[in-house]
Length: 206
Image (tube, rainbow, N blue to C red; front, side, top):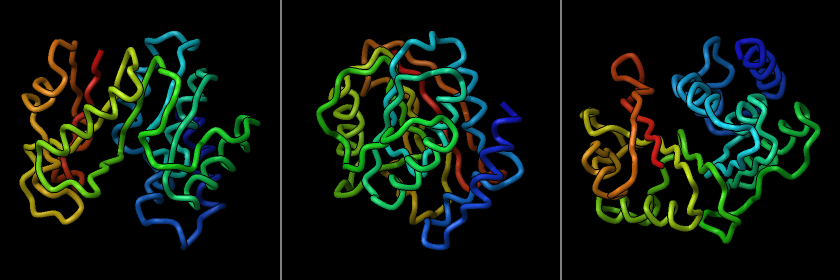
């Protein structure tokens, strides 16, 4: 995994584009983001025959990780046309697979994947309350009906002021338990403030 991250980092550095958002540069840093190793460890336990669908693929770095782990039935969706194009170019470069990322806004009609992934992606446009935001997450799940939902959220232990993460997107374990009632739920801390800019938790919902 370290070898692949080194290759990915070199690719990203050589294809750096000032038009891309600042957050895309995290995959040029010497160490991968915290959720990378957590996600890798979780996914390594599953059959590589399982299908994977990622919400908010950005420039394709997480999809590239998933492909490198051995999953081949992999699709993503990204609303931003420039990011989706960059993601498809990256995945074609590493894995010779075209059109992995759909340029559209989720939810769209899809075949139910075995694994639904939403990490480093906090969608809250047109939502202004915690109940609305939780209902959106539930609707994302119900649109796909996966066996496994890997969902990273901002944890409610993060108390610092932040325009990027308003208070209503900061979720407790109780919030997730109530939203996905009767599901098996495990959680893993990924980012931790103040070492990182926020505190985030990755949930495995099955």
